[in-house]
Length: 186
Image 1 (tube, rainbow, N blue to C red):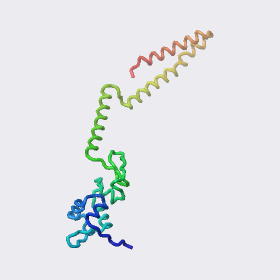
Image 2: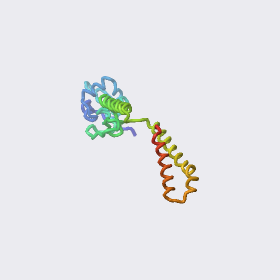
Image 3: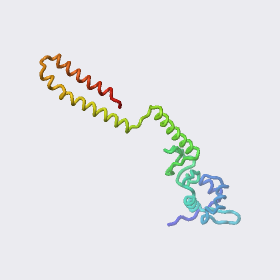
């Protein structure tokens, strides 16, 4: 069953939605409350439920206004929470950032990019792909050098019986392999 219309004055309606009577008068003049009003003498009365529905339908969802907070189920005195984008939100309202917040955020991103460019030019920051390729190349050369040791030492070590001479041959070959790796440019 439909609710019986509850007509109130513009002043009373303004109090219920949390704005001034002048703002409600302006909304009536703009036609935003057409169909929710009736005129009795010189006074314009507004049906509360219809008026709130009309406001919901006609207000800009990106505008974080007191009216939308109240008609959207919020309370203008309700504590607002900080959104991810820096704007404020209340209830189910999407976070909205104003121009100055957007400008600040833009400047912060620009500063971060300039810092990265500076660090790249000064050599503090390098391309991750190039680092991975260089590390892979060095790792592969180390592996190859170590895998070649048995082939180079097998015949020599097979002929030796003295533990100290074997250790000396192995140390010398490992040192030679590592020195060759350290001389290469990566």
